[in-house]
Length: 203
Image (tube, rainbow, N blue to C red):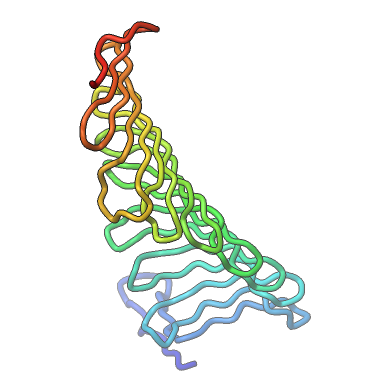
């Protein structure tokens, strides 16, 4: 590591110094490394705190995608990550011992979403978006299979989607509209109920 000291400022009684280096190592009297601060090859920097075994347990750094704080397990596998993306939106990611994502909490100016995953693939999402809030089930291709959500007027709607169809329109919707129960198929309503009474039924 290279370093240099800036000249003292004669206008101040105390000497002002500047140390420049591409790596700093903080160690105890017995030689155990407690922390490192280094510049990485990709022009980013990272600050790593070590445990008693000399393994990294907390890493603070930046990248082209944003900033991140990672908490590692004793095998140096990241288990929790707190990060921001390029525009500053925060997210928290929980991972298993293999590095696969179990859950992720994402937030932006108009939405907040809690995503549950299996082998890093989303399977269930719970949150709110600009149009409302809801619970969303997705398949391994991130396509919706079912949802229970509210629209802009907080009316609850249960929707089922055709897994084989890449379109976003549901094949069956069950919900409420103006205090009436509505059961609708993709090609139109099949029945409208008010309480236990059928108001209208398709021929």
